[in-house]
Amino acid sequence: MQQALVPYFREGGAGPGVVCLHANASSSAQWRGLMERLAPGWHVLAPDSLGAGRSPAWPADRNVTLADEVALLEPVFAAAGDPFCLVGHSYGGAVALMAALAWPERVRALVLYEPTLFSLLEQEAPGQEAANGIRFAAADAAAAVEAGDLDAAAERFIDYWMGAGSWRRMPDARRAPIASSMVNVAGWARALFSEPTPLQAFGALEVPVLYMTGAQSPASARGVARLLTGVLGDVSLVEFEALGHMGPVTHPDVVNEAVAEFLAHGRAAEAHERSAHVPALSTNAGA
Image (cartoon, rainbow, N blue to C red; front, side, top):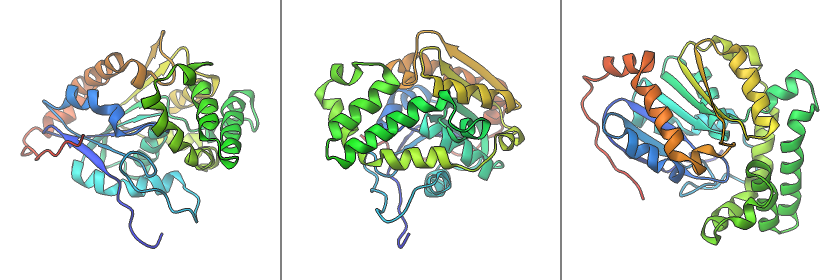
């Protein structure tokens, strides 16, 4: 990378830091409700990943890795102040896990909603059925991008995660940014399927973890949840019966309340109290 790429991030509130990482085909805007919910007691930061929202696009001459994604977040982590809590949904959850492995001393707690580390399924059994749904959906979407049909790519991708017909029922205003993000779909899949970190590495994490899943989610997300919750040492598992993979977007109030409760109690809350003497940070919430 010839010049540093800095992600845009919105922030608000005062107190210990919470960094929120969004899903693919989304942006930091998905966390606005959570930012409002947490702002009275936390300094909340939500970046746009590269190629999303107001952040710059990835250079076209290189493949993205999850380690790259973590490294790009350093300006956000610095603004949050150490130690901070990490909240991640889907791809953002995968990045959050990798960040916690890279900098365990900086992360106070992890909140995950179905991180999509599909490489763990591949390590367990290459080509297994649980991973094939997203593998085929991503391949079909990438082929549609190559053919110049971003809407078809988005329909294949969104319908995999949210159910058949979801794309057609979506308001036009929501479709446009999702369709434009499909230029990154091959890179997302490559990063998630090729991540070399073994499952056992996550067993070394000592931070408290809230791991949320939706009972209506595809097999790929549920398969990753089965593997990770089996090795994470201090994990609280919450399954929402009526929610799917996009629960933080479709039912933000339900998910946000679970996040707030987790951060307000237990070891995450104890760490919050130890940091309460830190002077309030200035806010600069984006639109």
